Amino acid sequence: MVVTGATSGIGRAATAALAARGAHVLGVGRSLERCADAEQAIREIAPDATVSFLLADLASQGQIRDLAGAIVEHVADQGGGKLDVLVNNAGTVSSWYTATEDGYELTFAVNHLAAFLLTHELLPLLAAAPAARVVTVGSASHRRTRIHWSDIMLRRGYHVLRAYKQSKLANVLFSAEFNRRVARTSPVRAYVADPGLVNTEIGLKGTQGLARMVWGRRRLDGVAPIDGAKTVVFLATDSSVEGSEHLYWKDCRPLQPSRYALREDEAARLWELSARLCGMEA
Amino acid sequence: MKSYVLVTGATGGLGKAFVAECASRGWDLCLTDLREHALEALAAGTERMYNVHVLTRAGDLTDAASREALWRYVHDSGTRFHMLINVAGTDFEGGFVDRHLEELRTILRLNIEGTVEMTHRVLAYRDRTRPLRIINVSSLAGFYPMPLKAVYAASKRFLLDFSVALNQELRAGDVTVTALCPAGMPTTPDCVQKIQAQGLMGQMTTMNVGKVAHETINAALAGRSIVVPGWVNQIISSLGDLLPAPVVAAVIERRWRRARASLTPGGARPLAVRAPESV
Image (tube, rainbow over all chains, first blue to last red; front, top):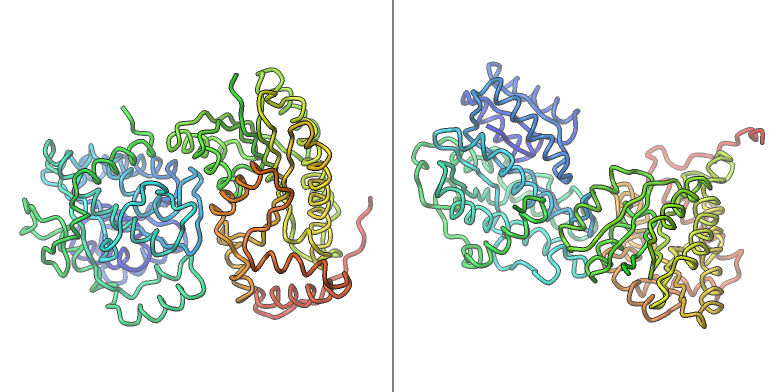
């Protein structure tokens, strides 16, 4: 199993829980120090865990491709060339418009495009497994928003919430479209895990002022990351999920996502744009 | 004939915003910056997103030979331009006595010499079928003398006056020159931290860089001399005219020292006096 954003918050809790259950887990993080720290913490809880970490900044498509290469190598070595689960958890927020090295808006690039690209890069490994799952961590934030087609990178109309909500909507649209396009022909299904409000540091990463203050207060009402990771772990491992047609899950139960998130025209349009932005055009 | 927008310092935060803005208008681009790898990633991403043609040429604009090579390439490839955006610029941390002479030379070479040379050279390679727009990235710092950033602010003052004068001088030849004078922009985590250190004022003067690029291109197309993004910044920029320069300098020094103190946990460091370097 592969978990991105595995060094803090929900990703770290999920990595620990999956490893403790005996899964062979590859965590992905951005900083060597935080990776080592997370690995040590997991070994303390689960001494027999098979867990290792890989370094990549998911804001960079070049690094995502290198990461995929490293995962392919690792899985060929130790997983028989099969990957059972990919958890697209890594996410970020930013108070300001920031462009990645590829020239794309940071939130859109990390929260959506990285998941899109990594999933595609790892598809051969996932398709080789008997019934692989792609679990993307979503959020109730995907509701009451839309894809801003006229300025999808929000260069002119940037707002921290608008960017975050759009990226979380993109996660659901992507997962639904994945099931329409890919799951028909290979035994891989995509799910979205809504962790609810979780007390993590995501809202403090690139923010300041009011947004930072509100998040700092609001996170106190959230559940601990280990509870936030429950649905992720459930979707990654529970046998009752197998073959389920339900896309969006919260508290280990199916839940209806927003109507917009299920629109096929929007999902197809986003898919085609994402493929183009990731240089995957035929 | 294809004609391009030439952007220096293209892979930095403001550079990337200008690249996206120009590409979104369907303009083909020629990008230069220090790092070849970063230029290639940006060019590839931009071509995919906006379906425009992007040329790249890595080089060091503080180095005369490197500038020569860039323009040799322009000459040999027959490239022509309808816009030049001089984004490349630099500063270093620390007060005047703390800085190495080489750092001061780099500021002068990049901010002043590099910009002047690019501006002069592009005139010979302009697309004669349309107006030539030149944008120089000055700074809010260009409006007043700035203790602790004396050389940087003076170099930005140079760019401000240089641009306004040239805009007048070249207008008859269908060339416009626009000086962009932004406050600090949140383009990297480091910048964000510095803006935070300035407290409320830092936040109020801060603008989203995508919007700044959009408004600046509109201003350049309208031939405006000076762009100060954001109304708070516009007020601040006019204070430089209202108050005597020594008063402004005293106020700014206090503000910078306080901001720097909040960045270093141990409080304000006394300025270390280093022995002068041999020249």
